[in-house]
Length: 388
Image (cartoon, rainbow, N blue to C red; front, side, top):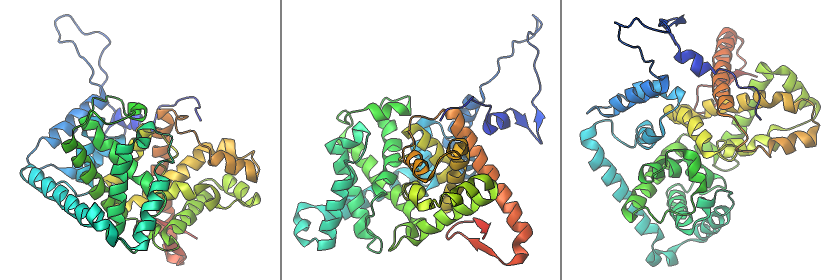
């Protein structure tokens, strides 16, 4: 997927202040009687600012949300995601007791529905759920996710969630949505500096049982909060999923009409290639480190993930348009279903995130000017409004 790397929107933005004025330029060499100026790396400065915000007795989450558009430092991601999803209190004095209480709640529920003494009470639907989960979990290329201890953890979380949400129950693909949380919460308990190393781990034997319990409970509650805003993606007939597919198409029609015309000419249906994108929030399309980068943006405003996801999918299609245009129907689908998760340069992801932002702003502007026409449709549980 790599093309010639460009300076990203985010990097360009970091070097500016006010309304686009360049930051003061320092001379290449300073007089001998002047202190030597050592430029501060923007990422390091931002990391220091986030660390300072997290150290306050009452954490200003809104400031951190506004900084998350440029990504979250790996060492802070677990705590920040918990804050973004309203699982961890912003008041430091309440954090420990609240998290302990919530973690105990999860394990109390686990004991009531999953323990050996309760299994004879399982309904046929619950037995079917366990069978489906057990079939889905091994379907991964990531070595660590094929580890039995990890799969058992995933099975417990997914089963408890399904029991607590009978309207939708477990749906294939939910196991993928659990992965980013598991990896994010694993990092603080493992000596890992680069998230890409997570995919090379073979086991979690060096992590204490107490730490694993914290990871499991945190995964459950954050996964639950994520799905609270995406319920109609997984209820009967998945109406929310098809609504998102429709909206991706509507955005592409507006921002890349040439690609839209090619898709129409080849009679390609969006569900043929983008169903998995929506069902799994792109988890299968990218590496763990890239998913972290994308989900930092998604979770910073978790109540509008559906909207963010529509524009990110549109940006992905736009980035691939030069490869897609020459392809016929079958070739198009094959390429879109075989995206190499490790075939992306980080700069390309930065550009896609920036493009998604531009698409959203341009669509919002277009819709505000045509609202009087009365032909707008909106995406459920989001702020996306696009012309039909």
